[in-house]
Image (cartoon, rainbow, N blue to C red; front, side, top):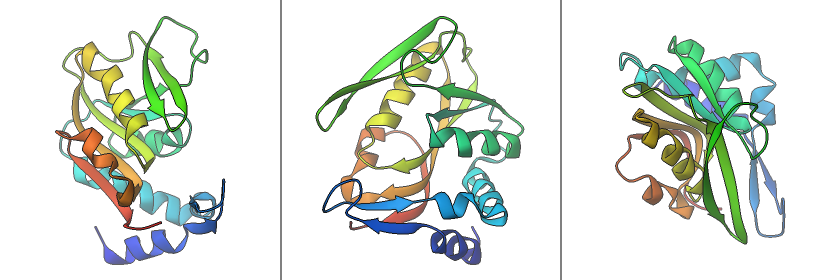
Length: 179
């Protein structure tokens, strides 16, 4: 990974204090998304560690995982599979529930989206507590998909989300060690 790429990408992530509530620093990626060169660099660098690993499918979680996942799929000459919130997919689905700070949520994927033996790269914009990606991985594995890695743009390391993804190769571009 080129240090200039990383510095350029980081410079376009805006920190918004007290959003969505007091004490939270929100990492806003919309300036990065609006910059064509930065977006292209980001997707290239997120894909780089997985080049040459015969990735068949990139799986991305709603909604920002779609943005990066489809572009990374193109970089790796792979297909793309969306993981959605409940009720958004038209064919038969499987689901996985996961814990939120207050309650639970659910992710769904088409039941036929992954075939046994396919090599899968999981992608999302942010690793925080790890619950969303853990649930996403739990959708892929029972279908026989082999998860070759997990790629994130941002990791909020102070929330220890990596612990929920133990056993997977994890790549994150930008790491924040404190709020």
